[in-house]
Image (tube, rainbow, N blue to C red):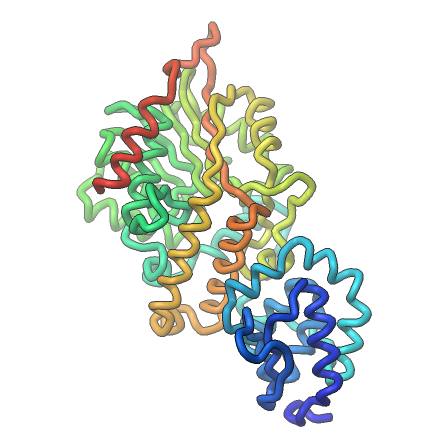
Length: 430
């Protein structure tokens, strides 16, 4: 059987049957590399297109998700209706893969599959000890050191790479991101002249917003050279020298002085469970007494810390999610008092929906900037993450904590009334 010979119809049907059992639906269409197919022909929920037999080689090599990811990224497999398809690739489906694996492999082998575990150029290949500074730098650079123009295609005007804050599902993304930046500043209750540290500042959106709108001296740190370079240029363009700064640094590096507030938005996922004690200790050490910290991070259900083989290989090498309760416990064990915990899960689903739509609208430019394989990585990763937030398998939490004063003072007002009325009004007016 050659790589281009027509597949046996009976074997195709057996593959469709076992995949339908895995995904819990038979209302889809399987299209083979010669144009033949089987399934629901009239109104399929999605179409899985095996463009070559190589897709089967990938699928049987590294189940459940990395083999599919490699096939999708290299283009030997495609999906029409990706969001609907990923809605069926949920935790239940992943559990059924193990039970149905022998049947799935047999069906693929009958169609001529030959296992192929070779990686792709866009996968990460890290060296050194897990979460050592050198290895963490490699991991950060793999994900973030792409042209800023690529990220701007889908992140929008603010270049904010974390979930936005939507007043309504139809709120414009840029408006919602401005509202999120404002909400973070309101939760931290910043005052003019205070010092703010943003750990994992990305391209500097929170640093710029806090300095321009709240009159604080904002310091941002990032481990990505390209982010630091771009943010420093943008800072000068905005005329914020002497008011704000962005440094290429690690949160474990020595930083002079204490800060009135520390923000860490979308960075804790890179720390890992074992790194949390040191991370929380650093946050406490950097805060003055009665200083406030806001930790904003993606969280998971109890017992599911991993991010999956596909994300670990292609997107977030060494990334690890934690339960919200584990993060609260770690902050408390680090000497901080947790004052508020809020889930913004639905907001991240809406954010990702916007990002995917923008990436698709700018697809040709994205491919020109980073190549077709990396562009496909981002489309698959963001589409899958959107489904995860929609279905509740992952969430995102904002945790506000304080470093108490010597007599237990928190400096926190009795109510949260100043947070949401103003933030919601901003979401409408920006």
